[in-house]
Length: 100
Image 1 (tube, rainbow, N blue to C red):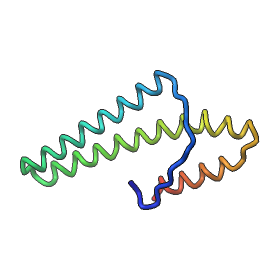
Image 2 (image 1 turned 90 degrees about the horizontal axis):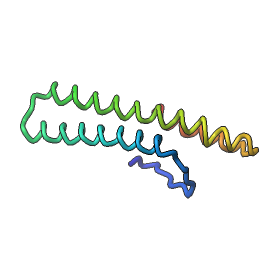
Image 3 (image 1 turned 90 degrees about the vertical axis):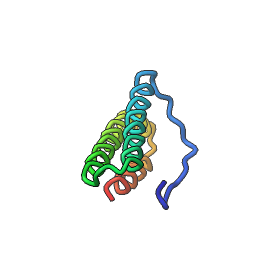
């Protein structure tokens, strides 16, 4: 977790399809991380490990893109329709953290 992690009491109801898709993506990343750990344990060559780490990073970035797009389409759009303009500031702050 980041040193600047903020916990939110907000919740989001997800469709069964969105829920399954997100969990499937995370399971694949989890498998990649286990594979990287195994490579280290088995003394794999450095560049081979680095390539796998890069693939895991790409998978997490892909997960973030999907989650962010869904967040904007649902949570942000709904909040704006309801007049909660502070959601835009929250989105901007989130994007700034993601772009570090």
